[in-house]
Image (cartoon, rainbow, N blue to C red; front, side):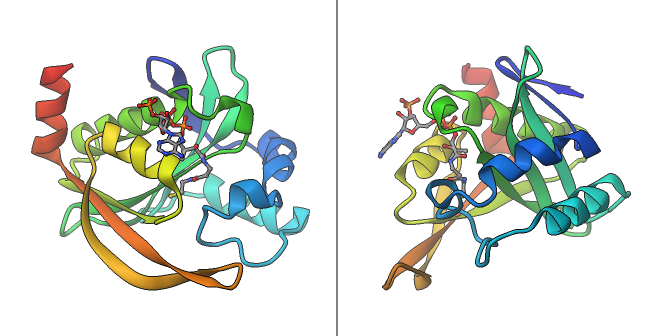
Length: 180
Ligand SMILES: CC(C)(COP(=O)(O)OP(=O)(O)OC[C@H]1O[C@@H](n2cnc3c(N)ncnc32)[C@H](O)[C@@H]1OP(=O)(O)O)[C@@H](O)C(=O)NCCC(=O)NCCS
């Protein structure tokens, strides 16, 4: 269990299936996510949970919950590259009523602390669609900087959008912690 100020991050459990199924096919949420092209069945989600339960050196999936243990969403590090000491971050808060209240930033900072100080990673990066202004603002708050734009690389509702790559180095995270 990783403890933040507003949230805790814990391992995925079989009992999370019901909560995950509540958001996984909601367009207002999945329009911001990369891997949700087709509707997702309960069986597919069960496989995701089974995979998350197995030890995997290149991926860590965690559940975000409130201090009262209410399920909020998922956060993960994937494509973990141990040689180059970096990983890609993904996050979703599946309950819209919890957006814009600082839960996302707190979950990310908690995972970053673990990534830099326990896993000994040096860099965490992510991909975000240009229309995800809330996500971009949240990442900036956590210290991420735009590194690159993949022009018109994401197709959504008849239009192409830029995909922004943002990154954060360990020393940048440290200097931010000292400023807090
Ligand atoms: C992106 C996400 C994880 C952020 O979590 P969150 O708890 O909503 O984020 P926070 O409250 O910590 O920060 C959001 C910030 O964006 C700001 N914001 C909201 N809408 C905005 C907009 N349209 N333009 C600019 N800023 C906006 C908020 O005011 C807040 O900034 P502030 O604290 O300075 O006021 C969450 O909203 C989510 O899961 N969204 C759906 C899935 C998703 O987008 N996942 C990420 C894919 S890359």
